[in-house]
Length: 259
Image 1 (cartoon, rainbow, N blue to C red):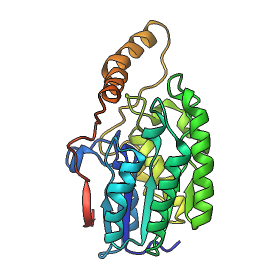
Image 2: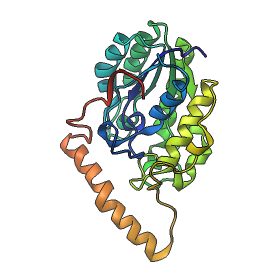
Image 3: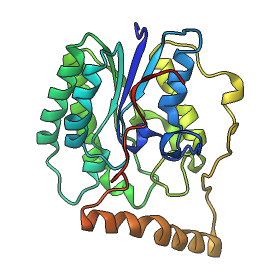
């Protein structure tokens, strides 16, 4: 695939990098997209990377705020994941949302850029998020159809069985851990037919995982109670109030840069 010199990443917390902490970087995170950009630009002084993703953004916000900004950067490669924050709302019209998604993708493809899209994750391992499997499956089929129509490449997250290992997830059980982001970076690089991350990147170099493993008995009850207090309840409250974890945040790399 020709991804050449200008890579722009669009989306929400998944692409922003939440779950892969790095206090030295904008918004305090790194993420799979940064790791992909570092690998693509390793041997090129002219390579440029922009990351417009902001946590909490819904699909129509991403289309309205990020697509035109990406087009203006004249990208040669774009990655886009949008829709997860809509699927978990009480009510959602997926067909209507995907009409906007289709239009956004058409605008990106009109630049001549190669575009990489993602299916949603199969959350069957989660008692909470697993209830949304049906919605995600519908979303995925529409993503596949749109990708085919516009000649986009697909990263089929739905079929990545390694993410049923809780070590791939951060303590909030909503975002990938460091290990999850490293793995996703390699999955994207595979789709791009590019060399994977160097071996030293495969471990927990640069910070260590904050992922939570499976526990049993009283420890499980305590862990679940802590998760409810620290992550689940604030998440629900934000949705009731109509606020977002990304309120007040700006894109991490709004202009092309070299990491």
